[in-house]
Image (tube, rainbow, N blue to C red; front, side, top):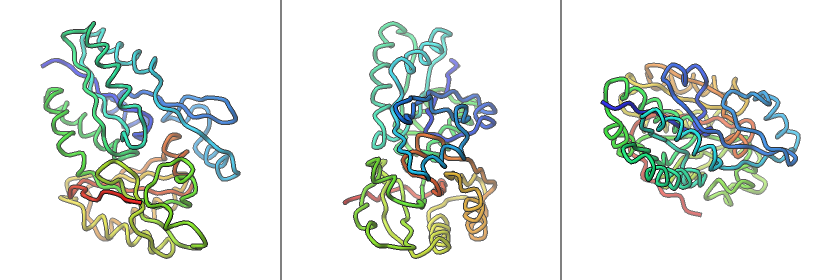
Length: 296
């Protein structure tokens, strides 16, 4: 079987230990603060996660960019030159144009590397939902599946990755244009917490609201319990924007209802973080297929 590399991007929010354990490569997007551009590292090399989110708390506007053309070209070529195919699992196309650019570059490289494959998958998800797909792909590779089998499985099951989250404020998502059905949640809604999903189109969609953080946790725990399939065989993924205590509270509320085999908790990295803002917590599980399509 021909070898293949698994690539993803900064949006996956996977920590270094997991990436190294499963031999996962990634391409970096960039974030911009006061006109200066920084590579969006999953390992927080330029700013600590706490410092990054403190800037946002203090009013600093952080912009993001998609993966640069030259970065895709360099990483794809690195593997193709070794005779290794590439499976790239990308951030949702509803949130970034990166996957579309990757597909263009893959097509260009196919003219030179005629015996090689670069397969680009639109995850229709982000954060650790995307990361979960990447881990699944790596485990299938370890089982001896070829790149086409793995790609077909990820494509067929990507809408079975369920996301439920809540933000400290929807203002960051509104500014970034990253959320549907946001208007209903603005105004004097003190204490109201939006419940945000990734819909069937890969959009972040605030599909309901509840009063207070504790009720938001309980609602999300119930939604996970309703959506999940075979929890005793899978990992619960939780990402947070500098809110480790809240993430722990979410984990405890969910595990009180659902017997997951294991849990993985990590910081939301700079790209997703710049859009969702500090205080956000998002949970992910594998289960029922997502059928909701968000509407304004």
